[in-house]
View 1 (tube, rainbow, N blue to C red):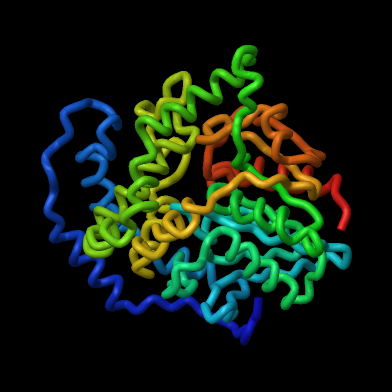
View 2 (view 1 turned 90 degrees about the horizontal axis):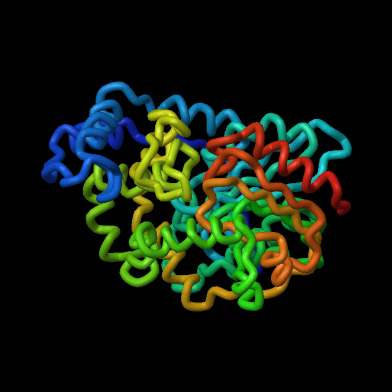
Amino acid sequence: MQVGTIRPFTIDVPQSALEDLKARLANTRWPEKETVDDWDQGVPLAYAQDLAAYWRDEYDWRKVEARLNGHPNFLATIDGLDIHFLHIRSDNPDARPLVLTHGWPGSVIEFLDVVEPLSADYHLVIPSLPGYGFSGKPTEAKWSVEHIAAAWDALMVALGYTRYFAQGGDWGSAVTCAIGGNHADHCAGIHVNMIVGQPDPATMADLTDDEKAYLARFQWYRTKDNGYSTQHATRPQTVGYGLADSPVGQMCWIVEKCHGWTDCGHQPGGQSIGGHPENALSKDAMLDTVSLYWLTNSAASSARLYWHSFAQFGFGEIHVPTGCSLFPLEIMRLSRRWAEGRYKNIVYWNELDRGGHFAAWEQPDLFAAEVRAAFGVMAL
């Protein structure tokens, strides 16, 4: 895959876009209140109104914009598409290269709090997925997980990193697994905080208590919480119209997952109708990511990753050294014996007592420690 021009990039959202956002928030047409007293029907009206008012009257996009611009930003043309990425070179002469990949509804923002601890020992490359954030929006139906993995591999090599590590969660986990599976000539090892695989059918008659809990959590996700995924995978363009036109729609589409997928005080078993998202993420933290999706008009383009990838999604074996960190409120968790059916060279395994799907964003200290521990037992 060809990597073209790599050039510096500065994020500078026009003030007119921020003023348009405030006007749209002020003119929101609201639905009626839900008929339950929890989050079981989605984001409650009262909380949506409170968060939208804060977004309109108090939130400051320029703060996170300045944080992002505080690191070196670049655009690289890869296979005809501009890819945005942060590139933080470590001062450590023994630092090793590491590419970090986010998922949906994430962004490069979720890694900002781990840049400092990780850059002590790693050269960090943090790309925005195609169609996300400040990366270009694909105009061809080819940017699947495997295609992105090939693009990331080409980018790392173009930056001079012919041997590197890869890390990811959510779609970032799928991309990272594809890098490990398809580009082992350059990738020396991977770490994932969402372990993408399948339970072993031969174990179903002899499940451990933990495995029963993992299956219950994932079954809850499948029966109650994955409507967004079905829509993204089948009709991403249609859902994009509403989210591109309504900032409150975009906000609730994302904040629902900040509630359901974080360790914010849910009921036993992980059914995400209890708890409150601000127990895990602040208003500003959530609105940083919501604003990024809104200001880059990325609702439809980010959703298309599901359409591009689900039809050909697989669970191929991975033989590079692998580290796995299981956070308790992850939506997909595998026991080690299940994971070993796909990951054939697990060199690090740890199950943590707090944290959820957005590990780097929600628990940056724990996440950074896990990454360091996993790659600490791997060699380039």
